[in-house]
Length: 454
Ligand code: UDX
Image 1 (spheres, rainbow, N blue to C red):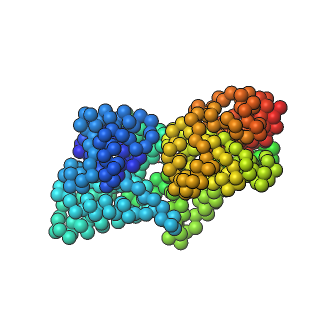
Image 2: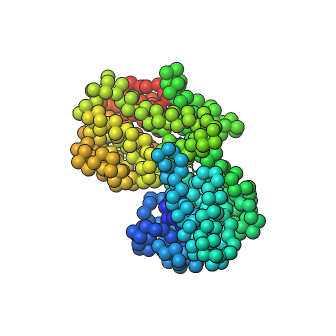
Image 3: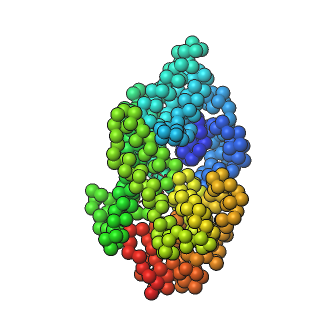
């Protein structure tokens, strides 16, 4: 099939590469010349495991094309995916500027029937707006060409997006048009073989399903974070509690990990947008409001522990803090809403020097930090280390922010000799408190009893 994908962000690029990999011819369009030039030269703008080789393979086979031209993209398409960004507006609602601009560009050009597929996460009712925007353009030029608008939300986890696309748990298709649904079935058949994964529903339900799923996952995390803070004052260990809860199949063991709060491009934005949608319809979404509040608070928890460890924030001045991990989670260089950004802001304000190491996110982190704090301030306060070991050289304490695999089994004895303050702050509960204490280091986790160095 011939597919056009509008938007070569992380969703558009992954979807385009995966559709091409099963034999479709895919044209990826972006209005950003620079990005398209990079992609044509085989440079992938994001870090996503497996994506570079998949893009290379399909581009070489002529199945994956890149363009900035809407004329070319529309002449190509039987099916057009909208995968442009929907950043939050100031009031938290999703900004539909890009999606509606793309819809108008489609309406200005289509000559033969197409199916337009909303893949971006968009508020309930957006498909109707997209339909109206396309129709408006068709009316202007007196065209009667047929088109349908379908909702097909993505459920891709960064860092595992290729696998999520190739072997999905479910494929949600919201459509009010039987022939468009048939086309979607055909398109997704290679990813759904032997086990039917495609779930059909009306357009609005599909739009809401995406928000509902993300809001539920975010709520589970905030629930566990709140419980972790309680466990700590009660002298319980949230890790034992998590294990004991998760074995109940009604609860399940995934997404129960207490930590530094959820970040990323989806959960914070989608929770906000759903709360705003509720407010627009005179409905207060109490649980989600609390989910968001708990998450904001959680991003400060480690800094508070650090201040307490040193007997007050004023004693942090002049300390050197080693940070392991900067990205919002492992296997990505994405810094959007990363808890590390909040921690860094507080450390800088307290007068701490930071030595940070991240396997892939350092340059993206520097870009974001320089934008937020200015290059001079960042240069003064932050050193990017070339390895995990180099980050702890000359540092007072270690803070584990992102649970990259390479941080899982450090040499605690070496850390005990190196760190002046002899303490580890484990923001993801990946270490065994007893083992750390035995090595001669104090241990602070999330929702667990603190340990003194043995
Ligand atoms: C998420 C959804 O999982 C995906 O289905 C959707 O399409 C997009 O949003 P992503 O943002 O890539 O994907 O990250 P995810 O792996 O879901 O993690 C989100 C955040 O929650 C991260 O900051 C992570 O560290 C945190 N998290 C996750 C926890 O704190 N505890 C957990 O148990 C799980």
